[in-house]
Length: 196
Image 1 (cartoon, rainbow, N blue to C red):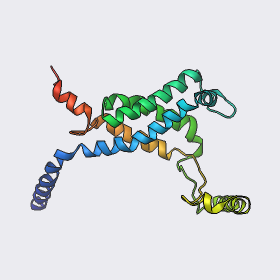
Image 2 (cartoon, helix red, strand yellow):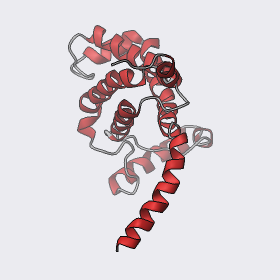
Image 3 (cartoon, rainbow, N blue to C red):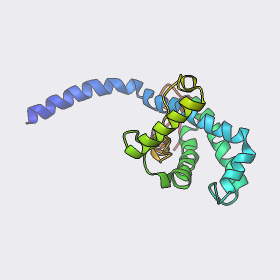
């Protein structure tokens, strides 16, 4: 048994010690995945800020949040500026915190009541019936081939799945930072070494 354990760790250490030199690729991949997500969310909020404020504040059909003007601007700028910082790998750990807060608000204020799945299961009988009815209406009254040219129709469930995924990715970046060799943070830390 000791021989197997020793052989395992010899192979393990031989491979993964060499991979340490490119361990910045994982945080880079997370950052680059999140950049368009937050850029689009933030710039869309800013582009229609009056509608965003109304949606944040309206208790009947919106989120019913307090101080909707303040929160709408905070969310929009956090997402847009956060996307730019993630792109550069600048202040990665710091920007992860307000972005995680934004995701927590989205999870509990927007998506929670819809369960886990972001897209409804088309294998479910109820969903399949509704999807079939929608397709039939579009075939009869719309240009169905043009509408489906870029992909199939789905029924959005709007669950917490995507927001939780982004939250976990940000949580990882909180601990890893922007990544070795691939972030401004890395080079700043080399120029300004820590004291104490």
